[in-house]
Length: 217
Image 1 (cartoon, rainbow, N blue to C red):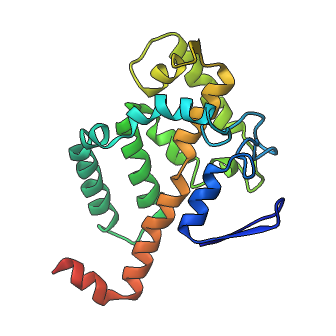
Image 2 (image 1 turned 90 degrees about the vertical axis):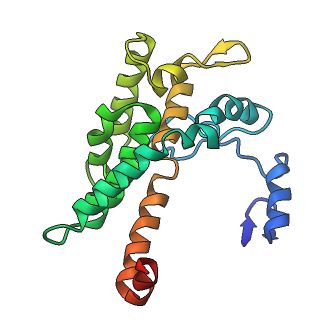
Image 3 (image 1 turned 180 degrees about the vertical axis):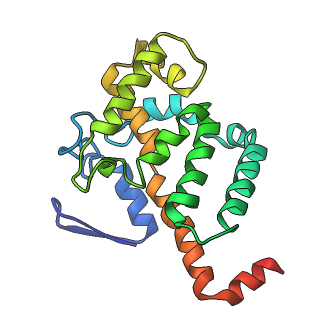
């Protein structure tokens, strides 16, 4: 892997060099808000440097460590079998809308204990910034984030949003903007990556049916 860093005019090549650069936050900082055209808050913990980055990660990691995720494996399997069987039955279907997105979103609904939101998440499409039109806009996501934040503060449900709304960093409850930054990442982080992974697998198996036969055998 090779990365060119514009400000320092340095080219970083190889896994070891990249890991060293990631630790060098004085030279290669993440302390910058991105997507300025659609949001005015930072995605957390992505857009802050250590030590604050580590503070956010330490309170969020328990939701995604292996023992936590393994508790949901049977539900993941049930969802996957049901959605795959539905997709391959009957007439041909659109792979993103009918398989990849539902598979990702239904399993997130399990992890976050928000099955009631799955249909809405799917309706956003693969990129929430273009959920309403081809023009990038944050209105759809931000309406949802504002709604779940208000709901979470009322403690009316037991789910990931309620828990995150009451997280504390250095003894202080997170702010509304911090909630937006964390919840936005939990909904969008890796979403399009997994969708592309699933669609890429299907595309490959469609082009190379011998590989599909190997899997079947």
